[in-house]
Length: 238
Image (cartoon, rainbow, N blue to C red; front, side, top):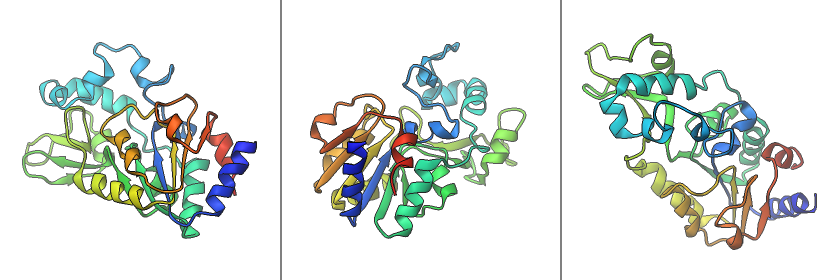
């Protein structure tokens, strides 16, 4: 509890907070993470999930890609949890200036937050690779076969697959927000996915806080490390 009290004091004394989040932020909403023992990457498939979620696999084996994508990454029915709701309240108070997220589930938007940089894209945007027409997530997930555009082109989710660059706008603006923050809260991420995790190195502010079930290679740089369940930590903040 002492660590949570220390975090609360840091939040109270900060006016330019940035939150950097990973898959662990959404597990309390019923969305599986990737690298934990129960995560997607430890499930058995015909191909490794890292291969399925690659750009090359999408184009070479589109039907199998969409079987996995529709089965495992459909989070349209998921709702924000205590972490998302707390961050919305923090933004309303004017303390939270930006959210930099590795998640593609759109739950920060559902909670009401406005200033969000999505490093790995979002399931909510999809486009035809031939004519660039945009399609909704509902259209993609509810399609019986591989989703196709009315022009006949293939529809691709605007999520960043392995082998693709991070979106320039979100990456650059996320970097800028992190570099200007006085408090950076990193939560629910193992900080092993580059280049996203390297963004932490641009923080020059007063306090770096890492909240994660497991240790990370950045723990030694942090002013405060809390190895606990995010739901428990954020339900004790005000």
